[in-house]
Each structure stands twice: as C-alpha cells, then as structure tokens.
Image (cartoon, rainbow, N blue to C red):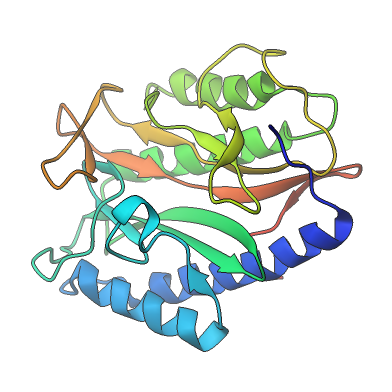
Length: 250
C-alpha cells in the first residue's frame, strides 16, 4: 500500500530532510586522507544529537551504526570501522537517514578523498547526473518506470552499469515503504505517480559489472569484479508543482 502525505506532513519531512543535509555536509567537511570511517560515524552521531534527530539506520534490522560508509568497491551498507583508514584517491559513499517528528528522510552522496583520476571523477559525475534525471521524472502522471529508465539509460549510455539487486523506495512513516524504485526499467511501467507520494531515489552505479555480493559481516555489499561503485540519493516529494527535493538545506 502506498501512503500519500498531506502538505503538512511533507513539510515535516522537509524539516527532517534539512537536518539530513546538514549531517551530510558536516561529514563532507571531515572526509580527508588519514581518518577512519569510524571517525565519520562519530561526527554524524554528534551532529544528529545536536540537531535533535534520530539516526534511522542504527538498529534497523540489527544494523550497528548510524551511517553507512562504503569505500571504493563497496556499493552500499558499509559498516564504520576503526580499522578502515581513508587514503588519497579513495571514493567514499555516505548514506544517512533520520527520523524526525515521526517521519523519515534519507540521502546519500559519494565523495572523493583528495584527488582522484579522471575516470573515477566521471563515475561520480554520471551517477549524480543520473539521480538528477531520475528526480526530473518524479512528476504526477508519470510512472515509476519513467524514473527507472531515465537513470538506466543515462548510466548505460556513459558505459557504466546500474546495480539491480538494491532499489530505491517509498519513505515516510516507515524508512522503507511502497513503491520500490528500481534503477532500471521501461518508460510508462509500474505505479503512476501522484501528489503526496514521497520517494527515496538512489542510483547505485558500478564502473564494471552490475554483479554484487554481500560480505561475511552480513551487510557490506561489494562489486564482484572489485571495480568502483558510486551512490547518490535524495528524498523527493511528488507535488502538483513538480518534484520537491526535501533533503537539501535551503
């Protein structure tokens, strides 16, 4: 069942989304060579308490941290660790969700650690643009497949692959709601979009094969060929005036 939100409820989600954006921005400021992924976790936890929001991931199905931090070939759900030290040339995906006044919001960004080579930067640029193209399709009257195909076509036209085993999702009173939002599909397929729907759109893009596997920790998903992966995400409300990105700080 798809839960559509009122204008007032979307405003509350937007309040929480602004906090998510603030946490991600603070994490962006601390990422540099030599820090551990647990250092980023501690900073996210500190800012969350300062903002009065509840990190959404910690405890969700037993997940042990408040952020997912995925380095290089890690696709999503990387667990912060004192043993994982960021190095010049790495890329790091930061995924953070929050519960605020009974509603969830969720966003992710992939950052460079110091300088990266041209092809790595292109992977990040294409993934971010794929997100923008997916969001542009989150309009009343369109269908889920319009979002999915916009993402897939742009990514594959640029020589990369979309991850198929993990998908975007509805979001609101629960962290994961209907409908699912694959990063692949055909235009005009699936659920028709209506005002009040709130969606977490999140392209996950691999430099090589789209195959992934989950490590023995039960969470961290990695590319099977060891090549890089990038992930960007926003929570978006479908409104009568077009898509409204709620996980921005403005």
